[in-house]
Image (cartoon, rainbow, N blue to C red; front, side, top):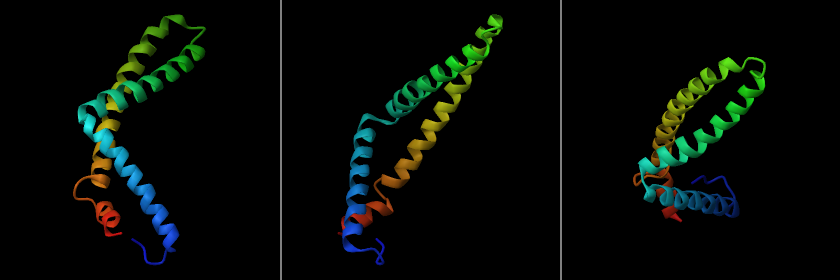
Length: 110
């Protein structure tokens, strides 16, 4: 860890990092598929879809024939994007808190 930090600040940062690592271990224990499909596609993507749909319905209130088009477009776009987001997020967190992480070394030094 950084030598220029005060000991209390360094300890606080390490404790925060350890909490994040433990949270990632809980997520990791549920599995990659669960994280991508449930956490990112269903929860994150579903929420985004509903918000985007509400905005689209408000915007297209005077053109009701375009609403099914909006639903199909939003659902497919958000499905693909949330899948990609989940895969990218998994790899970022694995690189950060995986078994061979530089953060692991920093935490276990102290």
